[in-house]
Amino acid sequence: MIPTRAVANEGQLNQCLEPVTVILPLLAQQVGIKINGPLKVVRSDKTSKQGTSGDCGVFVIKYIEFLSAGQEINLVNSHHMLMWREKLAADIYAFNYDP
Image (cartoon, rainbow, N blue to C red; front, side, top):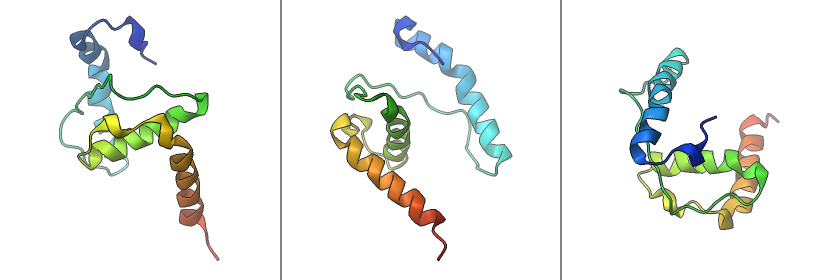
């Protein structure tokens, strides 16, 4: 894990995350997901902080969904976390449901 508090500026953040932006597309390719080139680092200081320790995964999923849809990630906030967590659980259950 990269300690974000130790990263002072955007350049340092990009430098710390550069290996990740190259390695993740290579790993995705191994499972058949095509990603053109290295990933882009997006940083926002306008999103809310996670309030519950279990929200980090939901935050990541919502960031990916919002970025994939071309939406602003500052719309991801802890106010909607309970609803998104419940919806994700229902989606996973429905996806795996086999009557």
